Amino acid sequence: MGSWIEGILGTNNISASAPCRVDMGGTLDLATFYYPLQQAAPCTFNMALNLRTQVTLHPYRAGWIKVSSRGFESADFPLEEAPFSHPLGLMFAVAVHFAAAGVHIEIDSTSPPRSALGGSSVAAVALVGALARSRALAGGQDLNRHQIVRCAHQIEETVAGVPCGMQDQLAAAFGGMNIWHWHVDADGPAVRREACLPPIAPAQLRDHFLVAYCGIPHASRDINGTWVRQFLSGQGRSQWVRVTQCVRRFSAALREGHWSAAAEAMNEETAIRRKMTPDVLDPVGIELAETALEQGCGARFTGAGGGGCLWAVGDAAAIETLRRAWRDVLAKRRDATLLDVSIDTEGLVIDARPGR
Image (cartoon, rainbow, N blue to C red; front, side, top):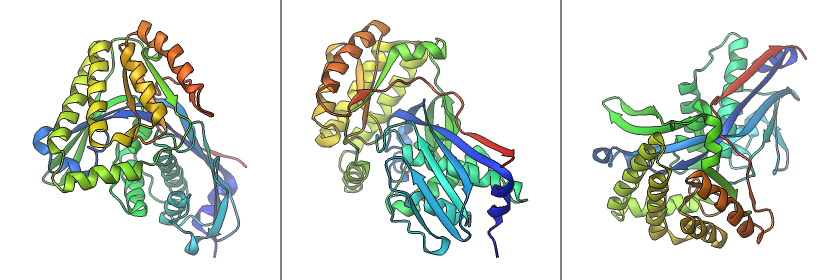
């Protein structure tokens, strides 16, 4: 007996894409943190980037799932044997959740692999969106953006076996620049979105920030794990309150177009993190952060650091000077580079049309 998706993919072209993000205040989106810190009004900030990940669904061998993604070796397994511990295990887990056998999942990401820009979560959001839309075409239930976020997050947290935040999925689904407020009410978590737009055109934003890839992949689970263990043991809780204060100051400064104040808040948050976990920045990251400070800009690692990317904010003139200085720093390491980015305002886009 064939899978429900086989007929859909035989007569329709299904794809979805979503943006990655830069962020500030991450880890506060873990329930481990925002439940006990409710009195501090925990919040995080992220900005979606035009580095998008596209997921395309193709027909495949009956009963099997195949996943292909740049930077990974393609793999295929029978639906009932698909391993969630595989490097592409999150994608297999999403497909199994939807019982989508007979599908080849092709992932094309424009961001560097394991760059701490939320890439795996972005791919999961796009895949959940594509499969939910396929299911709707077959007469089943589609999902809205909030439902897609929660589905992708819950699957990722289950597969990872460690606490996972939700801000990456939110940025992927909704795009733009947002503050996410992590409330808890009588029914449980109730995240609230607050747009955070400076008083300039979106196209002008790129004059006020930079994103650099440090040339080595990140290992966020190790650093996040350290923060979680410290927090559970009672260490550093006042520092996490300061982190959320930095996020609020940073966001308020952005809304007013006060770039120097935003840089100051960003640098304070980075300093708090470095004190808790010195290895959050690798040697190139340290040099990038110190160079930004010298130029009057703010700099922060993306995600949980430990490699991957850094981003900077500041006045347009300071950012232009920093651009040249960062290029000199990045030239010292193979594969390190400035990324050509701007803000993404669309978020998740699903394309389902007849034809094959």
